[in-house]
Every structure is written in C-alpha cells, then in structure tokens.
Image (cartoon, rainbow, N blue to C red; front, side, top):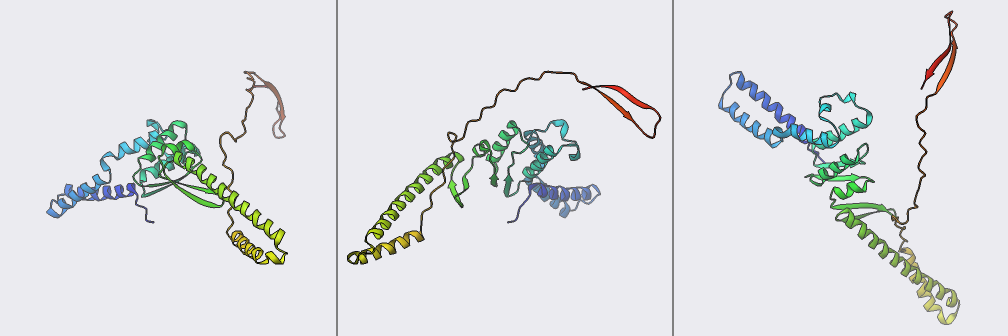
Length: 269
C-alpha cells in the first residue's frame, strides 16, 4: 500500500514555492511564473504550511517535550526520549495508514492520555498493537482483532463493546462444546452396548458414521477468559525507610612506577 506522508508533501510544496518566489524576486514576473506561484501557494496551504509550526509544537508538547527542547539536537536526548521523537515524527508525517506497536512505551500518564485523544481524531486508518487498555478506550476504536484459541477473532465497535461480546462468544462456544461432548458420549455408549449385537447392527453402524462426522468437525473447548477477579492479588509490604547514612572507607594503594604511596585516604558516600 502506498503511504502518502503529509510532511513530505509539505516539504515539496515549500521547495517549489521557494523556487518560484526567487524567480519573481529576480525579476521574472511573467504570467506563467505568477500563475505557477499561485498554484504553489494553494498547494502549500493545502499541505498545512501555514499552521505547521503550531502542529509540530502541539505534538511535541503532547508527548512531554518542553518549549526549550524544540531547538535541541536529537543526539542530546536519551534513548527513551529519542523514541518519543521517532513517534512524533511518525505522527506528524500523517500517513494514510498509521501502524503503532506498543506506542505508549516511554510515555507517562499525561502523554498517554494525549496520544489517545490524538488518535481518536486521526483522519486515516490506525492499527494499534498494545497492552495499554486506557489507550484502547481513549482511541475510540471501531474494530478489535483478538488472537485467541489459535484464531484471529474480529469484533466491530469500541474496546468496551469488544469485552462484552468476547464473553458472549466464549459462552456460546462453551455451550456448543458441551452439547457436542454429550452427543459424542451418547453415541459411544450406544455403540459400546449394542455394536456387537446382530439385532442392532444397522443402528450401531449408523451411529458410527455419525460419530465419524462429528469427530471430523469437532468443536474445540474455548480457553478461559482471564478477568480481574481471576487474577491473584499481590500485596507487597511497605519497605522500611533506610534513612540517610554517611559511610566512610579507607583505601591503601601502591604503584610500581611512582615512589610515593597513597594511604588512609578518607572517602565519604
């Protein structure tokens, strides 16, 4: 799929506008150049050229950057902040399809909330892979794909609606499984009791064929859904405050290349 990047489009529009503006400044005021400049201005405006600085500032601020950070080099930031820069660049490129894999890594609660609101208003297609339930709720999803029981199950609607429908789907699956198991047990019992009797040979053979068809299309038992109630509660004791202590230690070093010896040096931590 072809990805159309808004920032690339804006850069092309800016470059074309600069070329035409320089031509006019150099004295070329022909009708062709003036018309081309008018078209370039329209393209620049359509690409968001007049509010690009505001858009960049909004995204950077939303992800936790301060105004003083805007002019810094990327190399001045730590690895976690550089991941935020990469995310900002991706969001500002505004592709037709936005693919996000665990986008909340390195984001604090405020930035996560901003990202969810931003994605909910995104005009293109957004595909999110995440364990962050708050993001799934705030991004206002229209479809959820869950991988369970070696299958990809699709649900249309919000994340909250998905949770409800998932429970219903598992309950339906469990009912079908229980009904089929009961039928299998009934057929096997009949074959076991009457299969060797001549008077019931025909009926037993029919039961065997039916059992074979069922075994060829077995309903698998669904896996149990993990709910909040099912999760084991974890309680950790409050750690003892160690306080502030001053430690001293002594070092005694000797070097072969120097005649002096450093001894009993006091150091504090």
